[in-house]
Amino acid sequence: MKNDKGGIDLEGRIAKIREEERKYHESCYENYKLFEAGTWLHKPVKTVMDHLMQFQDNENISILDLGSGVGRNSIPMAETLKHRSGRVVCVDILESALNKLMNYSDHYDVKPYIEPVLCEIEDYNITENHFHYIVAVSTLEHVKSEALFVEVLMNMAAGTLPNGINCIIFNTNCRETDIRTGQDLQVFMEVNLSTEKAIHLFNDAYKGWQVIDMIIKKLEFTIERNGVPIRLTSDCLTYVAKKRCQA
Image (cartoon, rainbow, N blue to C red; front, side):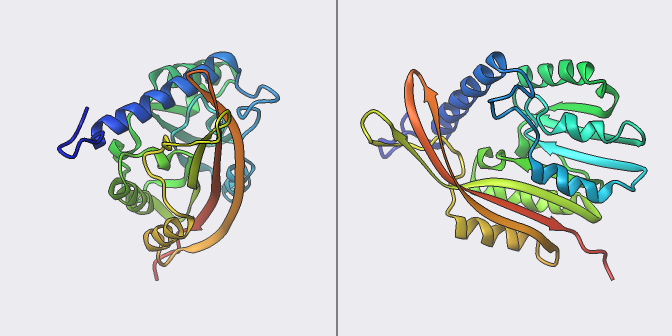
């Protein structure tokens, strides 16, 4: 699919990226069990669970997990609701992932606390002032454009209750290299920002909030696409902000 300048058009590029991401994630979900040692599904993200503890005294808690996958974070968060009331809304674009999520939620006895939503992140309507805790782990990079990324951030902020928290893990400065040849490849990421720009956009979206955690960590790991070993490097930006009560 070409545009007038002879390049791959945006729609075609996004379709290709999402097909590769679908194949990668579905392969992981088929070959590795949730919480299997030695895989990235081994355990929930510590930062996500640590900040959830700030709501341990709430009798009711509403949680949104954007890009939930098969429940790496959703199921452990739901387990904290067993002796109180609440719900974890799990948004994902892959029907196969949500099907596995519900199977796992049944296995771990948290099905009543899980609400699956088959939807692209940018299309999910976040109700204003509704969620205590919104989580987005390595998912906002996959909205269709930078403009939609900013829109999602604004919707997340508006959808958070006073004293609520948004916990975001976002990859920046992403680079992909063919390990065999050392050649740089097209990055399969819809939104690939510099770390500096990402922080600027986060600070704009969460202006007036208390930033309670901001960490940048270099990441490097190997993945495989169509039989080709690829080195993926990025800056992993953790950004956690708390919504202040209005005066």
